[in-house]
Length: 453
Image (cartoon, rainbow, N blue to C red; front, side, top):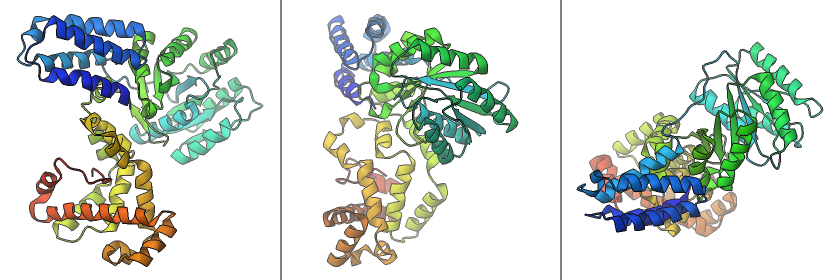
């Protein structure tokens, strides 16, 4: 996420860290590079100007110039100003209204709005413990209603059926009455998208807004459209009172222009980030955490929250107990570790939250990706129980059978066995000296293609 901006700013700010003294000249040079990095990230020009002016003003203060570590102080100023531009703090959904609380979703076609409805429904159900009902008022896009019905079934929320020959306002009225009858806490209404902002579309959404009086009106926009995302959100807000923005496809956005522009241009908070295709891939937007990620400082707090919520504690304790008793780490355990990684959103989501990952060579990052991990899980699934417990028995003919059963090549099986052997050696170190001993052994190295468990 925002890799290009992270790498560019990382190079700029790296030179500052060891500076024993700052002058007007090197502050000016640094801010010129920061300005270029932001413009290349497609941040809106007015936002860049204000950002650089604010950083310059604070950087020239006595506190920075006379500080014992002025470089670090300047980096802190850049981070703090980035947080200020994106909105200071997370602004959650307003759910303090008489149920069913109505959330109206607006956006252009192709922004991922329908998928985001399902993601938000899942987030409300799992994280807020709310009963949720969803409805599609998109009677124009083929299969939009069927898509939402499928997604609602996947995430386990109520779906109110509608037909393409109905009027959107009639669908909304019936869905609201049904949600009230079911005692639903929240009703999420998916509206029709268009390829561009047009008056007909705005009129229809305004009618729905007036009818439902939603507590939240959220604009869903593709992060990869850069500052155009902010301009489109502003156009929508002029016709419809938005309460917030959801940025989709942030995991594929290497620039970050939308995240840094929207709040400043529209005055509306970004409330969520879509960070993947899965229905669990929705994160509340915390400006301070995103700023830390952009500056290569990672987001350990979000990572800890993910681990607390998604890792199966019983399975983790079982593995720890097994290793403590001196029992071997087998391929079943190896597969379990990969599945737990998937539960955390995959390798990419983990690496994005670890500090200093912009310094890891790209070829190393490419060795640890979700596609490879899926292939490895398939290989282990193709093994017999005996082979998973005693990998030493896997020789030529068995390797060919496992490769054929998993749709892979024999060299893929060999690669997995090599990586497993490296992981097994690490795990053996836990037997005598515990986790600390294992971590000392891992310090400064990662096996080629291995996983940072």
